[in-house]
Every structure is written in structure tokens, then in C-alpha cells.
Image 1 (spheres, rainbow, N blue to C red):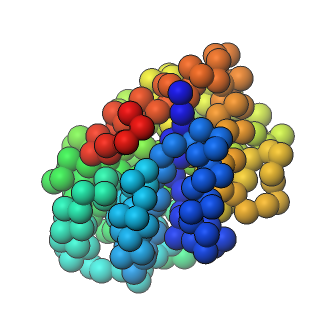
Image 2 (tube, helix red, strand yellow):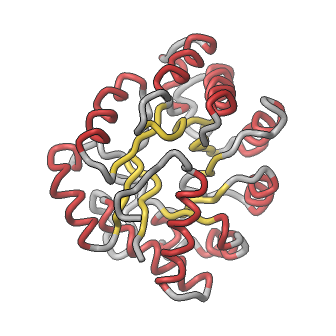
Length: 263
């Protein structure tokens, strides 16, 4: 029995300054594998080096919607993603998607970048890591229209509506649960997540962000994943071991390019 942190940012401080200690602390808590997520193409070489140095770490390649205005044009971005995916430890694309809450990049730039990721995912048969905030309809519309809904992936750090949950599940997507599920004011979200089938759930930290209770206010890290998993097991009314077994199996099913030494 072990957990997989399906979404963390090991290239961010404070983790990047002490990767070995960060990973050891997590592994001591039975978090045995890690997917470190790309948000900016300039970070890709660092993510690749982290993954190459640690057999239990894998990486994605992608552009966060906040960075969409500053990245490559759509066709060039598609080509860059395709080429980068040839690396054995690059196992998915993202995080990509749409964020209209902060609107750090114009909507059209976000959509163009998202389309490039979807097309690359279809071309390479790799999963998407999707970020969506205040953009549920446009996110689903693009997933349905680009490639006719054939892309696979995960809605990361899910905090959306029951409608988004159902649309994502209908598309075959997984739902990833972060530390938000432990927050006292997240009762509505817990109600939405309770209805997600166990076979479609992943767990993540999104570290260094969104530390779960009782660590709120501190930088998050993969070792804290156990608190999110405990709360999710409680919500689903199953044992912790069952939750860990299912979410790990789900991760390995979705990110099928991953090969773990501990499996």
C-alpha cells in the first residue's frame, strides 16, 4: 500500500533546494511516487533533470494558462510538446487549461495553448493535466471539440461544480483531490467529491500550495498528502488502505507510461 502524489511542483521553493529531504520525508509517510508538473517551458530542463535523478519521480511538459500569452504560438507549441514527450520520464502534458479568475493571459491565448496541448495529447496518446477556474464551460467545450472528446486526462485540484464533475467523468477524465478537501469551509466541495466513483479518483498536494489541515499556512509538501488521503477515505467511507490502493491503481492506469520500481 502506498500513495502517489499525482501533482506537485518539485521545481518550486522550498522543495527544490532540498529535493532529497523532501522525497525522503514523503516516502517515510508511504508516498512512494511523484509527478512534478511543468508550468512554463523554461522549467522543462530542470524538471527533466529532477526526474532523471530520482527513479520515483516523473514529469509533465506544459504551459500553465497564466503563462499562455508568453509562450510559443500554437503550432510551434504543439511541435515542442511532441518532441519533448520522447523523453522516457515525460509522461503527460500540462498543466494546461483555462483560468478566467486571474486572467493573467487573454482568453484567446489560453485557448490556443490549450488546443495545442490537447492535440499533442492525442498525437502521443498521453494524458492531460487540466487546470480550470471560472472557465468550466469553455474547458469542456474545447475538450469536446478538439479531437472530438477523445483526449484523456485529469481535472487537477478539483474545486468545481457538480456539472463540471459530471462532464469530466462523461469524457473519461479522472478527478484529482487536493488539500482543499480538508478545509473547514469546503463542505460543498466535499459533497461534489463524494459522488465521484472510486475508480476515477487521484490525490495530489499541488505543493508548495494548498497545504491541508493541520498544516494550513505552511508551504505544502508531498509528505502532507497523507492528510488529504485520510480525509478522502473518510468521505468515501472506506479504509485508508483501500483509498491508497485505488488511487495508486488509477494513477498508473491514466499515466500508463509510468513504470515504478516499487510496483
